[in-house]
Amino acid sequence: MVIFNRSAAIGKILRRCHRAVAAKNSGNHLTCFHGLWPVSEQNDFEQHMRIIPDFISETEEKQLHEEIEPYMSRLRYEFDHWDDAIHGFRETERKKWYPTNRDVLERVRQVAFEGAIMPYVHVLDLAADGVIKPHVDSTRYCGNTISGISLLSDSVMRLVRADAEKYQQSSTGTTSKENDVDADANDAAYRHQPEAKLENNFYADLLLPRRSLYIMSHTARYNFTHEILANERSLFLGKPIKKTRRISIICRNDP
Ligand code: OGA
Ligand code: MN
Image (cartoon, rainbow, N blue to C red; front, top):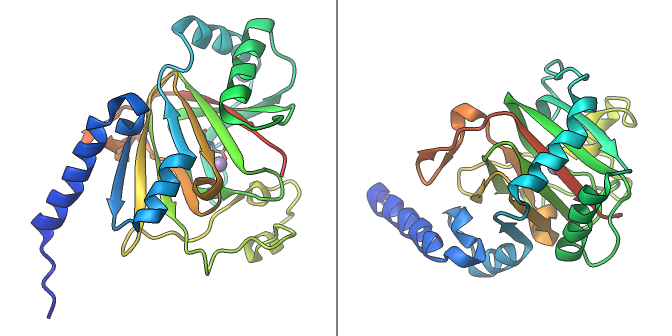
């Protein structure tokens, strides 16, 4: 009989987190690995899920916020559809930006993308009690890289390995869930919600500090669900991370 030594397992996890803390300059200190990661998977993941702290200055954060706020504040937060991947949010897409903000987006493009980004940048405003549930962005609408600048709040993003065998988006991007609904207008068309359990699996928690940029590409984008933890569950290295209202500015490339 195999006896699971819980305290040894927890010790191992904490040691790994502390190693991550030691790797400060690379932004790796913002990642905490949980579960048993195959070494090659972890190496790939570290290359393809990056966080750059202080990507924008306080002034740039203010300028981005000021451009978005007049439009955004007129929308109401949506809490209606519990099935949807995002709860407690309002959102818009923006093509034309003030010159200073355009410069920030150009910097994102240079740092995070190999080529062009989609002309419409997605702006997502998550209420303090909002949540982004585990999902994978549809391969029909989004290419191999997704980047996000966080405004106004820190948060914790969790990436959980989805079972690659069971979770396959077909070439049309249609899942059985989508067949039940009007796929064009529905959130389900953009965000798939494959099952990704924490038990007997491996996953990573990422601290996304306010004003940071994350870059999620390749394996991190395709083989893992991503989510933003609700404020009540928002912990990093055991420490509560208060999530207040958070605005993310998300750039994607074409499929
Ligand atoms: C999404 C998403 C993450 C973020 O809109 O699909 O995952 O940083 N957003 O807001
Ligand atoms: Mn997403």
